[in-house]
Amino acid sequence: MHKKPIAQEQTNFRHLETLGGLDMLQAQYYQQRFPRHVHDTYCISVIEQGAQRFYRSGAEHVAPKGDIILVNADDVHTGSSEVETGWAYRAIYPHPDLFRSINQDIQRSKDSVPWFPDAVVHDPGLAEQLLMTFNMLAQPGNMLLKETLLLSSLTWLTMRYSKTRLTPQLLPIATQNILNVKAFMDSYPERELALVELAELAELSVWHFLRQFKAVVGITPHAYLIQARLRKAKDLLRKGNTILDVSVQCGFTDQSHFHRHFKNSLGLTPGEFAKGNV
Image 1 (spheres, rainbow, N blue to C red):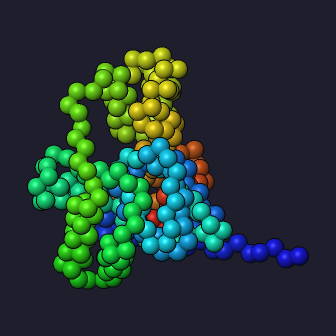
Image 2 (tube, rainbow, N blue to C red):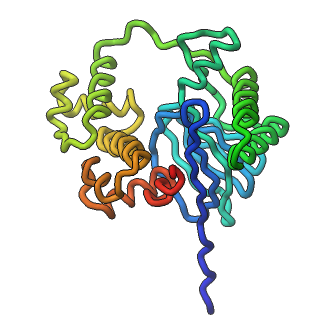
């Protein structure tokens, strides 16, 4: 009996300089399984084929063909196929600053960003407009039309499906200490950080630090450090650094270690990411 050949996964990544910078991804996945991870941007995607299963906001969700997936910046989430035939989607990753300006334009608040409580939205009209926008963004030229379509789509999305969640002015000391440690890890992701060192920064015992960090951030300190390293790696790749240099500068053990974590979290290789930024 012949084994059924494994279908080839495909990704097409592009970085656009429009409106402060925007990442775009078109992908077809079969075996890809995204572990729990976070982005410092939003993720707005439309399922084109199949169905995606994913975790977000404390629950599992399934998005079939035609549905819109919404992931807020810093939302812990996963991703895998719900069906044997895999799933295909298009996605954009808008920076919170872009949504902040949209919030201000629609006179909600100049100091807040929208929060999307629903992980999956069924809105055929908006999904069609988003796909039209994604198609236009992938074409050369027509910058004015691209930016108009993008802002129109995101404004529609914000007005219809978002809420404003203001950051409280005063946080509990333990929570603020964890956020300070998180900021420290963001500043020095390439460092070989010890658990004891981080716990001391948070003024907690090691055991309590581990529990508090996961409760506040949503993932373990080690998992967050990997995400911080990947964010730095993306910045360095955009600037034209070689994959080998980036893996060293970001604290990865070797190039294969870097490649594996990059592919697991982002769904494409460092080389594919670099190519999309040319």
